[in-house]
Picture 1 (cartoon, rainbow, N blue to C red):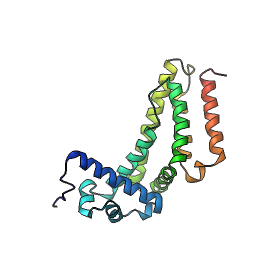
Picture 2: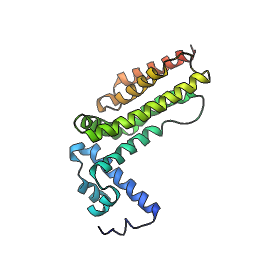
Picture 3: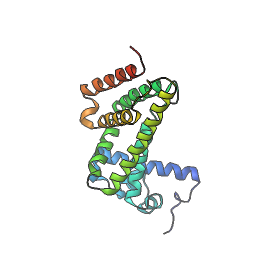
Picture 4: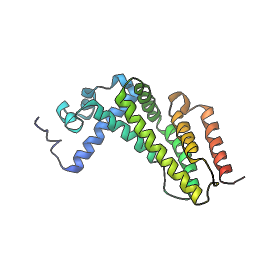
Length: 200
């Protein structure tokens, strides 16, 4: 297959084009649902031909992987390596809440992907990988917090990591992002972490 001028460009411009295609797919999923994602529409949104899209993403599954990677990157951006591990965790909770309010399409896309995962093995596998990576990050953060004395010894880091990830994942659902119960759950998690840290 002959490459287009865009596909032959410098590495920086190639990376930019790749990001543009992922963002176009992300926005189409947010606006029209997973069923509305068509590669030709993605190519049209970035004003490239379908051959150029296939150069960057040979299959639709590869494009979906790009979207999943992008959503995970947005969540990773809420983990700031400042302060104690316990402070980092509390800041993560607050930052995820703010992210979902500021970028409601993120919850929409995550909801669409979650629904699709129940009948699409590829999407299910991608989301499982994302959740596994998130759990590993949370477990590591909690273990460091225990080791450094920010959280009480003997804390079930496996269970707490699962609780945090499942709670935050539930908040990505469009019906939950702006619900009063979400604020209550966030405050309860923060209070619980304060107790676990030995704070009043």
